[in-house]
Image 1 (cartoon, rainbow, N blue to C red):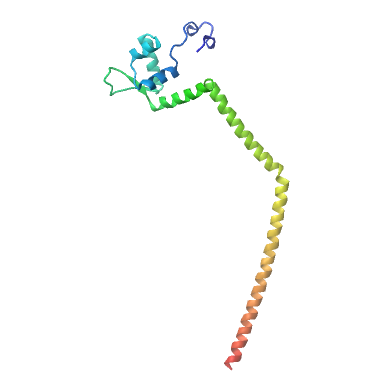
Image 2 (cartoon, rainbow, N blue to C red):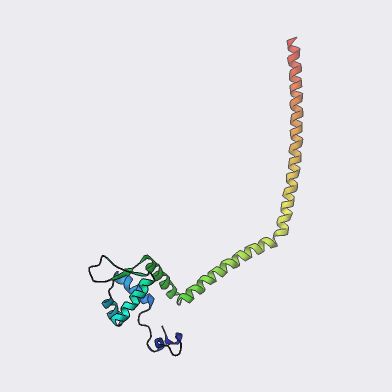
Length: 174
């Protein structure tokens, strides 16, 4: 990381980071399990510095000590460490976490704009929609009125049919 990101009197501006979180997570992922000496040699750190970095990632639950290792003390990635590594790797493709955040926010803004345009179109089409709804409601009223008329006519015809049937039955019984 360039030294201009650190404050003017910071020790970090004089001695830039040799092993970032992403670098360490990639290294552990590549070798499955690592020990302090390997990390110190690979990143040209002191063993104490390497141990501090590994313990810091352990406290963040990104690494864990492997209890089944045949070496004295080795670290391996946790599930959270793999997720964090995937996130940081993707963020690196977009220019860092800020770039990824900006891309995600731009996608969210595009989604919200699409939603806004959808509702704007609905509001603009509202008079036409309301006109159509009024026409459908009027058509429903007319259909109900016609249905009621047909139902009354069917009842009248049913009564007339029953009266005729009763008259015919009465004539044949005599």
